[in-house]
Amino acid sequence: MQPVIKQTLMAVFVSWREQFNQRPLQSLSILLVISVIAGLLIVNLFARHSTVDPQFLKWAVFGGVIGALSTALGAAPGLVIKKLPAITEDTMLGMAAGMMLGASFFSLLLPGIDAGITLTGSAFSGVIIIILGMTGGVLLMLGLDYYLPHEHQHSGPCGAGHQQVGRVGLFVLAIAIHNFPEGMAIGVSYTDGNLAVGIPLTAAIALQNLPEGLAVVLALRRINISAAKAVAIAAGTGLVEPVGAVMGIFLSSGLPVSYPLGLGIAAGAMIFVVSHEVIPETHRNGHQTRATVGLMGGLFAIILLDTLLS
Image (cartoon, rainbow, N blue to C red; front, side, top):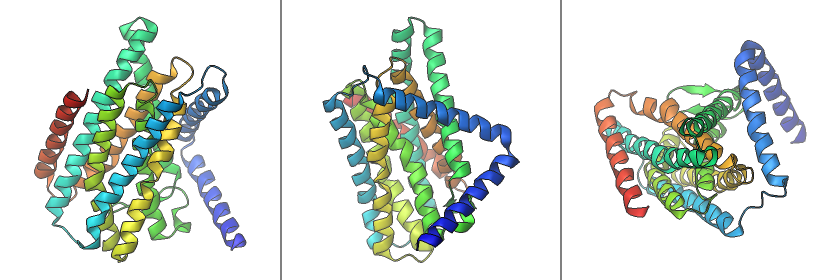
């Protein structure tokens, strides 16, 4: 078993090197941003002034667990449902996209701008911090998309080293890439202990995980994965969210600038996923109108939810 793992890792490493050589400027930009984010996380972990409040950490972990459970709950109907009309799936995913967009703006960007302005005393500087964070979040997700092997339902295998990974593994990695920024966003939202930010965001992500969880199971069943195994895989990928939540709260704690930067990073990552994956997925079958109506419905739901819970 060990030689097989070693050969696979070596093959993936070779693929990474080839990807880097093909697009060196893009790769260097991604590597630089990931290094900065990792450095910020390390500084916040070990700096004396960056102790995370245990209560806030508990809230972040609990929020991540809620996200994971909602994914499992959304996947559960896949035990008896093998297929839905494509127009229904596209509408459901459209709603999920609207919820993610609403959560990104109302629970991440707006509080982040307020925090940036409070920190710097300048509206311009506060917004610049958020823009830098969003740029970092987008480049982080580009790096994961470019270098982590995965497969989406219609676009096929992609990412360096995908030839060495089985199809089920590629699907699992694709879902993990999707769920990670959601977990990170939950963690960031509890950094300041502001439940008016954390609770609406957690609720929004939990709600949008319901249709997403079912869509994942149906995609797995289409490649002949048994119902029980498909549900278990979908539920298991939700465990990325508590991990992301812990990373998120430590990333945005410590240095004063970490909080607005962290909110920007999480927002940029989530908006990237919506634009790069979810919306294109809903438009592949010619159901753009229904998908857009679903997106607007999801956005309306988040506006109402944010107003009621804030």
